[in-house]
Length: 346
Ligand code: P6P
Image (cartoon, rainbow, N blue to C red; front, side, top):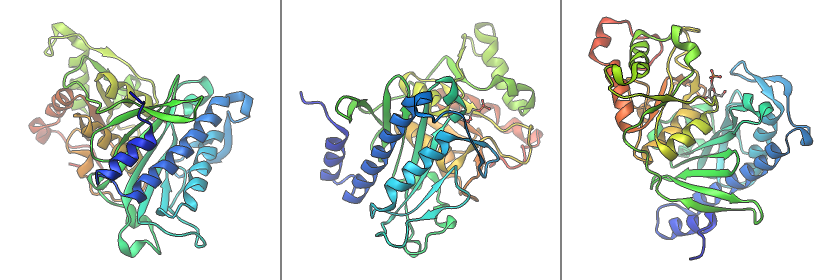
């Protein structure tokens, strides 16, 4: 049987009326940009692309050279396509409208151009995360940040490209979550896992344990019970993984199950979490839900959050349905007796 390339998959989705020609073309442009980023990431020191760019972003983070390069590749690729009204990025303070001389489209594209970039210099998997929204009609000719502030369930597509031992694209347009592997010889993405399904139960959790003393009591209680293993209230032993690259941790969970957590902590109480809603939690949340999992703040469904800002942060619990529900139980009724952490959506 002929391998199903991404192009063929998207044409079939369009033929069955599940996506428009414009969305098919937009996804193709984004994925071509990711292929270019994959080549740049793969060169490493040989490409002179490692190390810091000497600049910072709105997050207050030092930018890596590849952060800036990846951002530029995505902006350049999407400027002239005619599918977009504007782009927004972790690396840019505000959205960037498509240049006036180019045709406009009805979509908005958000991305974290190179998530996990602190891992680049040590050759650990990193990735590009993207999210697609419809642009409100009034915003097409004059798009502004406020036009991006839509809840995650409004996404028309979401995905990531992981640059690891293989370069893989994981994509949803609302009809399941599907994985494609880059055939480097042919420069084509080939469908290698249709309809990914996250096992409902797991014995593997992912969290940065060094933050443990900064967590809310509910989070400390939940993780303590995981660590207590078979002799504790959970009655089974758990394993832990933490790659510190969300794309890599989420890819593992989509592939074999688990729960990924970046909860609120009091290191900077003014921040509702570390991860960003619009271009990390929302796209990953849609991919996970489309694969049968859950994506929560611990207290609310991530995809239902009404965004207040382009770079808004949220706590994230996502992965195996049964385990996310188990974590949520620690944040329920007893919560009334504990002050909810500031900024965390109730
Ligand atoms: P920490 C990478 O910087 C990132 O945004 C995610 O990809 C990753 O899950 C998280 O931060 C890692 O955070 O605090 O463990 O370095």
